[in-house]
Amino acid sequence: MHPTSDKFIPFITPETRHFWEGTKLGELRIQKCDSCGHKYFPPRPFCPKCSSKDISLVLCSGEAKLYSYVISHLPAPGFKPPFSIAVVELLEGPRLMSNVIGCPQTPSSLLLDMPLAVVYEKLSDEIILPLFKPTEKIV
Image 1 (cartoon, rainbow, N blue to C red):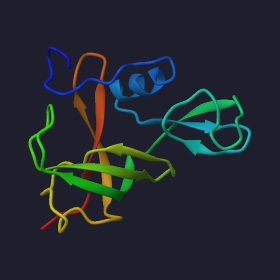
Image 2 (cartoon, rainbow, N blue to C red):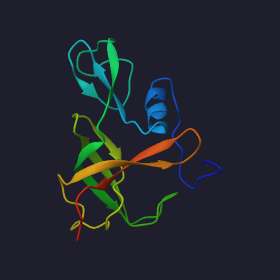
Image 3 (cartoon, rainbow, N blue to C red):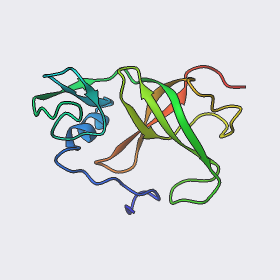
Image 4 (spheres, one colour):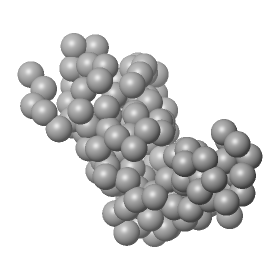
């Protein structure tokens, strides 16, 4: 854990540096294979589809939909139960694990395929975490 946060802070690695540098600027960056066109996450130095090392960065819109989730009722560092552990599918295609915030953490509010938008939470000077909130009002 980091002294300024009660949450676990991700480690920046050479493969993930571009991602964390982007979130500090309010950008959600993924990688794209310039050989086969596959867009992917998490970051890695080669394409998971064709193994090419010819990759570039793509700025995402921040729009997503809820692909899957679980609701945790157990305490975890930095989280007050209940909270969602979600897989969101970016408009650009890749899926990433995050949290859905800004709505009740119940199955009646966390609807699969619901539209989401990225928001950012500062955990430290180096780590700004992308989270997702619903873009339509939840009742």
